[in-house]
Image (cartoon, rainbow over all chains, first blue to last red; front, side):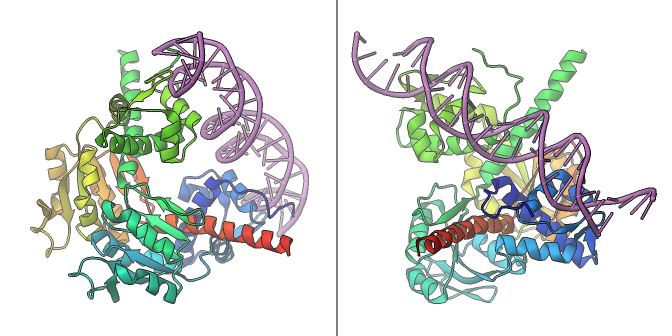
Length: 223
Length: 223
DNA sequence: TAGATTGTTAATCGATTAACAATC
DNA sequence: TAGATTGTTAATCGATTAACAATC
């Protein structure tokens, strides 16, 4: 074991682990027992050498000549990512986006339990999403503290994003997902992740256009 | 101009451009006229040298000693990303997620027009989301072709994801966003982007836990 | 002219991958 | 033993950043 636990783990590794995990869980439920890095590479479109390299940051989980035991690998990756514990989650915003997130079964499968939902719209407060009560944002700080909620998901209109982030910070939440296009400011102790469908569309569009430009260029050269 | 148009552009650059664009549009609507890379760096948490480097892949848009003209820079980045044209978009899935995307104003601001929405649920077909009619997925291929839709967004339950992708491919869609945890297979000519909230949560959780582990370690050393 | 800030180079840093010895 | 596949090294490749000359 040359593995140094204090070595810095590249960001890319942490982005790929959830991908491996998803495929492995699917394989496990399909009754698979072992898998090679070559096969996992095919299923995820990732270079097998990279998969092996990624895993060795955390230890050696495979058997030479055989491959990786799927169940063991799932457990190891879950432990690495913190998905071996239940994490309570508060949703701010009970609109369509909030509902979509609350209804998404994948969360619970990975230990993320939506425990509270907040909104400021009196017509929504008191209602339910699934079987979770929608509560007043004014109660957020108290309820989040009481229930020991660690994660906040911001699914409100853009204008309300910063306020939501501030309430969550005040309530002691240290992990936030922001589904708003707004750049939200949070204290240093908060780990924040932003997702904006527009960014993803623009990003994808660029690569599509680049392909088309390249094809056009080739056509030109041929003519 | 040392700028070689055929030089390969790093992925990271294309991920940052939409971020710059968002901030610049905000600044423009706030009445700003020029901005320095230093200031833009503060607003986006990105190193100013990197911002300048990123932009020079596409030309030199600034004035030494002055900075960048905001309006010009917005237009340049929009052109680079393809956001200077209207792109028609079809939404597959009229549930909460589909509704959230259809209602999101940011899309239209960047030239993405949701032109058609499809579902297979008879109770949804014939209804409206905003002012867009929900149509039968069986009609997808014909309608997408007729309307010249270029982009497909998959917002269906996981079990229906591959079918949705296949229909979109058959209809000639070359850009897809998959909001499903399923790994969807598409022909080589399709540019696909995947988003899964679970991946984002796991990713964010890891960094949070890492911080906490580091703090614990420091505390240990101090004691 | 003095001050500011870009554009660009070169150095540094980090991530990916090919190759192969270890070993099941 | 022969075949397979990991774990690990070292080479390659690519991205970030500091530094500074160019120039507004």
